[in-house]
Image (cartoon, rainbow, N blue to C red; front, side, top):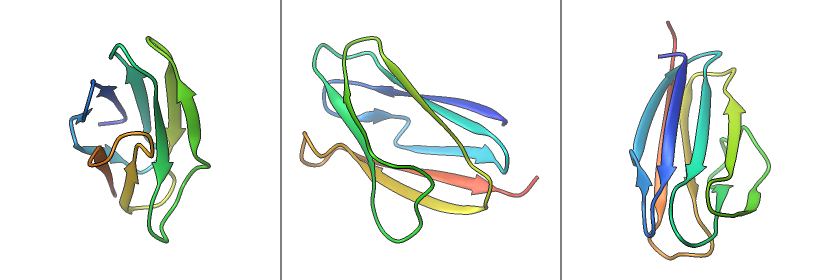
Length: 88
């Protein structure tokens, strides 16, 4: 897929493992009742941390290189996810 939406629930990213094609965009949408952030982890990063996403706010990243991109919410322990970017 070229576009994927990841919902930020009260304690998780849904889906936790998203897949998008190279050149595709992932949009995080905060559908919870509390604030969250999207912070890349590990050495393979495609964006700068996006902090303080309030209810119903979105944040999008376009991925140009294949590979796994791990991320987390630094505000909530255990709230992690991965974007798997695949060649078409």
